[in-house]
Length: 233
Length: 139
Image (cartoon, rainbow over all chains, first blue to last red; front, top):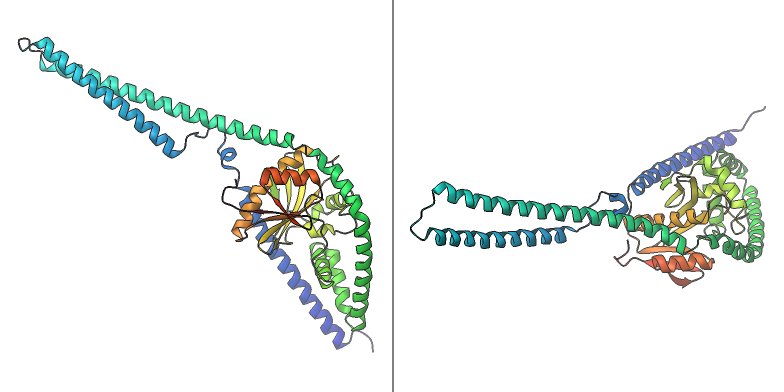
């Protein structure tokens, strides 16, 4: 008789199922993380994101400026209207009556002047608003560049290398101990008759992403998360 | 500047970067950095190409940042720092979305530590760990 035993076939099927499950799990997590990456890409610092054509004044500041302008123009218009009325009354003296149309025209001209003044003031605020926005954008972008120069990131590499060299010997010793432990664990698994499973995992490892995932799991078995030097070392 | 998925196509480059990184050499598997691992793993890219590989994991109440830097001959210092400046606010956003109270990283690089302390107000917590707890004022 030849061929795999029923036990071997079952083990192989289980292994295949496990592989599919892991692959599916990883693909699912990859898709989920891709979504997060897209979301993060759509975020930016508000000033930079708004670009050079952004407004520079906040809503309350803008409202206050418009209110102050409107009130100022309205007050001037009131004053001018009173002055016009006084002038008309004085000049008329009760004996000279201006035609109704002429009086209305004078008031109309005054109102028009006030409206123009208001419009010009609003335009000025708008221009100042966007000028401030451009200034903010430029300052923000310059700040980014200046900060980059200020902190001289170039030092990172050399210092990291120095620190790395110091840490390397220690890491190497730790790694050797871990390798010994990994071998011991692997031997133990083989001893339990699960060689088919370990072979399958090896096969997964050769396919790419899942391999790293599983190695992490193996390291976790050894008593913790994978040794990762971390950020900037 | 953008985040991209790190995939099997990045393995060759990751392997080179890791081999040129004395601290990561011989102790990190390049697959560890691929998207799909950890809470979020990705590649940072600027107009010239990849600048950093990043992996984040939830560590208690913090988002732990791991970074694989490139050899200086491949990615300039200025590109690295610009990338960090761009990335940290996004990591804050990611941490907040996961109801975490801050960021944490481990480093022995004095200039990087100083930069992160001054620019982002990270504080040491021992074991070469540096933490930034969100206070609502961070950009």
